[in-house]
Image (cartoon, rainbow, N blue to C red; front, top):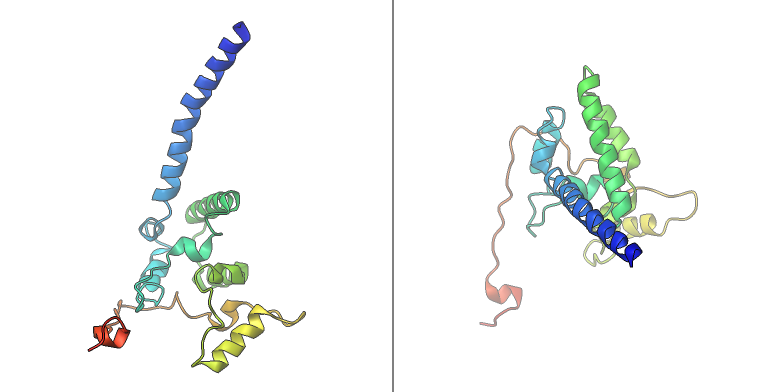
Length: 187
């Protein structure tokens, strides 16, 4: 009987300690996973400004791909995600205080070298369904089903989509189609 009481107390103490600890960890990860948080570091501000001007923010679908979508593994791979997020964050903080001059080009090349196609395919899944763009469809097929020795990365061709110098954010204007053009209602 005494063993069960001690075990129950230990489990209770474990829950009392673990719940706040896990809650604070989750809260910290959520709060530090926003582009606004990334932009608090002066080295990253230009990258966030360029991202805001890109099609990863301004697109007709209204979809926004933020920093984590491209620079970290998918969140459903929990251990990989937390490990990569912690490693990137610690590296950025250390580099902020150690380096005198931030070499954006060198860091951009290192980031692109670390990307794999799965990072892009988290959002861009349907790359082969482009009936009106046969050349793009064939190019994507050669990447997705590459022959050994001919492997390529998405960023080999799409290296200039997001982080390009821009002084202003130019929001794209899109014409809304009438209901009948969308096939929702016939006239």
